[in-house]
Image (cartoon, rainbow, N blue to C red; front, top):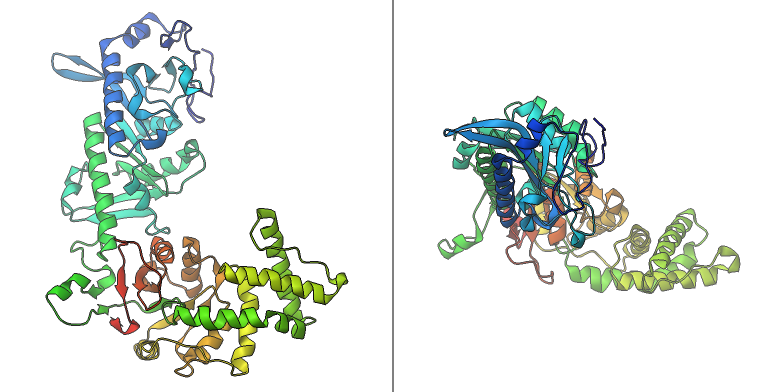
Length: 540
């Protein structure tokens, strides 16, 4: 029998692909024996194809198979005298098609060892030849290892988001939820454990990690793929569908519990890490100040809009850097520090010029004279400040300019009235406090050492800036956890005024509180995070 590996995704052993019939009918391999041919033409196969189409439309309506993503497969069953017996045939959905518009003739039929026996007719409006789902090698492995009767690959939003809350976790665990009873082999009091594997560029490349996960978790009927979706199976399509509905319910419930600060993995579903807090709407009944009682021993603070008014940055620091950049560069031009600043700016400006960033102008080489070099640097820095760029080259130069202002006592840093007391309390309780800002670390230290409440730097254990990563990227917070030496992300509390920073930190597993201060920007409605108006609301 001739073999071809292109029709069902790489990794399916012994796949035979047939060209579509010119007469518009499903193509059947001419190499099949009469018994198999008759079975392919049987009512059981046609009924199974129709059922697959019906279920795919339903799964699409649930958001599991949208955007041509996701896929479904099930075994053919023969029914004799009310007894259902499994066939060696398997029906599988195609790849890259609108799942809600499929018809039975669009389905592939495979043998139990992975041979494609029939292929769909070519449809001109799709602009591509039909192709079996890229999940085929994964489906075949599940059939082989789990004796499955049907497998669903869902791209449901909840199955993707649940893997992002803690990007370091290799498992999803939940217990004491009624819908756990819908998962094969589990009861209400049991802990449901679903392995999480890393995503890959192509679904066929997940085969090895999926196989390892099934071996490591023999009880599981699902495997989550981080930032992607989930594979769910059962011994029949009814079992697979039922469990898929329960899994998606549990994923969604866990996300909502996390947004409320509740621990989905514990039997009581109490506050995460025993954090006790009163929700703001309780003020309707209780006229006391909102307090957040925490047990985290690590606190990470943003500066602008959290410890320091945004107006101090925009009305004092930025104008000072803007007004003094030329003077500073002229006075320090030949120093190693200034040359390092200039080289960083050259690199950034070159990138900006290539990307067509407004305000970027070429920086001439040194031989034309430092006056022209400084003039072009001033023009670029001015444009960056106006655009509030968060690039390291700008923040580093600004920090060096601000150092001059602090050292010459031209200004002192302003912090909110509650900051000094909160830092002192946390220090007394043994809480370690760190700062994370796009401002370079040296400038952060100068700010807290020269505040309107004196030297507050003594209460701080460390400083992080953009060299650790962008504040709106999850990996930056993962790197901070590694640097501080925190094994459980939830042991660190992050306070910021920026919603996107909050989302990134929460995705890394940190506890997050949004700071609401005078002059801060507005937040999205129903953002899902707890809020404070003073750091003194956070108490141990």
